[in-house]
Image (cartoon, rainbow, N blue to C red; front, side, top):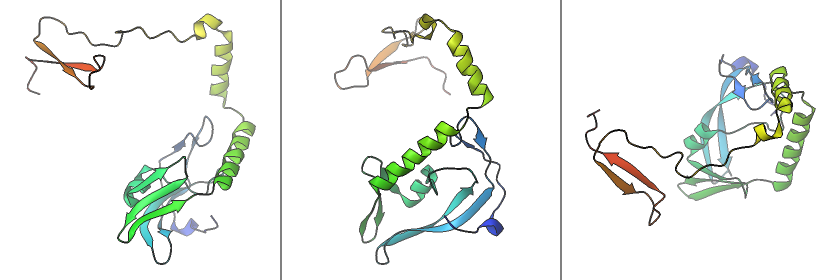
Amino acid sequence: MGLDVSDMLTKTNSPFYGIVPGNAAVPLGQVVLPVTFGTKEHYRTKYIKFEVDDFETSYHAILGRPTLAKFMAIPHYVYLVLKMLRPKGVLALQGDLKHSYDCDTEALEITSTTPAPKSMMQVFAASKKLAPSELEIPEKSDGANKVKPTGEVALKAIDLGIGDNSKTTMIGAGLEPK
């Protein structure tokens, strides 16, 4: 992002997972920066805590759920729109579809050229030794995941769906007060 925040970093012990394929990435530190969305006439500013790292990615910053909650923002990923309420109405931020596509392409190139860790290679090797029948996912049998009461307990079926008998739950009497 072009910012020199090295003197503002504080220590962190929260690693990232899922950014670098198969590995945990330990951030360099945390920094709190003001973030403003909108225009000069119609904006919203909050102080956001960022984890600073030095790995290759197509993104400059990733806004997670805590940031979206702080702004009371609603993202719509299909249309690349981020909306939040302001006193003057709804503030809508529109993303650039071409730029988003370019970032995704760059991220795919990075992950395809990054070697898989040894532990993942061991999983791949073990899966190649299995017979095709062992790799099949078994069919889900109807009623296999339903809880059945033990003993004689007075039970009542509660319909969770509107007219859908498959969406029911059972409640019973004689439960502990806790």
